[in-house]
Length: 260
Image (cartoon, rainbow, N blue to C red; front, side):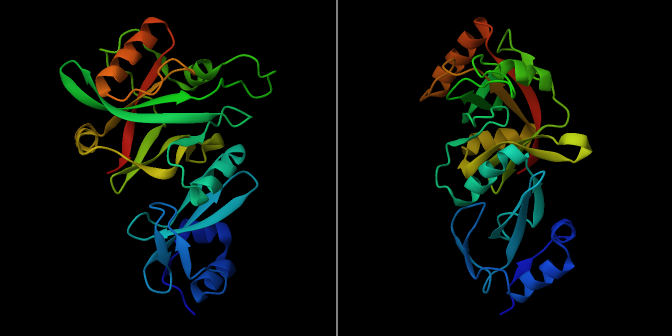
């Protein structure tokens, strides 16, 4: 039975016309599915459905989403992170994701909040791994999470009251009012790939979303394991950021907002 599928030109180019036509005809497409964006059930026989192709260096995974949640597209993911992309399709845990830097797949915790800088509230994400992040190919005994980020263009934070510098090529993806991923430049000019991706899109507050839509920028702070911790209030989160900065273990960048 034909499916109500949207197959974008870039997805068709990746999977080929023959496979795309089989999908549209219903030969290889599921009737029911769990939306890769909102995680609620969908039915490609009764509602518009987007095909979303996760592509690594050697592997590709095709997923489905409500057309109202996300458009049909190709999402390029580092090969070592593709299992994270698979988890984002099937997992129900929205609080954790895989760090691309860690060959042992360290888990990143991401917290959203508003940070007051020079009298203005800025939307921010605070990233902290749950374990040390080693450099690929190393003995794995040294935590190089901050060093790896500095090499990518993040800047050490000496004063949380100063806005971080922009980082070209990176962005924060928010769709339908939910946080989906932090994107970084792909290798060899292949566009952007997911540096961090939520297993399930994360809810952000109305104030955070309003501030992000106003500035079109999200401040991303990162600290090593144990430097921030789980803070239940924004004032406590701010205190933890200032302490991490004073201890020389905080980096940050201002990333453009992608989506709404």
